[in-house]
Length: 236
Image (tube, rainbow, N blue to C red):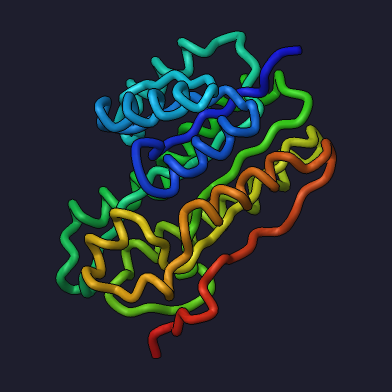
């Protein structure tokens, strides 16, 4: 029996790493994608040590040429799951956000999932139960100050998820967005040093939900949803 195969971006740390470990524990072959080869190698070694199977490809998901080459290398292979988890964060007032910062946030969080999903769609069509899972943010359902660029990107990702789900419905390819509240990841620690970790979602919880979505029977899907700690209080 052929192993199911998943591509996970942002897999070198945080939520992406947790998803890779969960998928590998379920017997899914994982292809780890991220910018830092040393981090990806460490996760691949961790998976191998646990008896799983993983390969990795260091690439910047905002580099169209690198993404195209990655897709070409997978030509003809079936892909069962694509997890668009790579992302970046910016805390700044709109008036203090440069055009370059805005472009970067939009490219990482919105444009890259669009391009990668389009690039790997032929591979997903070779699966008998394919999933695209986009990792969003709770900012798609609550309004938070000083994250206008990030919010614009993630709300755009929510729209992309819904529209693509409608496009691929007839092919029974599910497209779902999981939008966590603040999560216990290196990115969150950098953004909010000293935050109360009791109010954070653990990456393993997000990973468990991603695995649940990807394990639904063919032809079954779910709506987008948020995950957050009951101790999390949204800013006024």
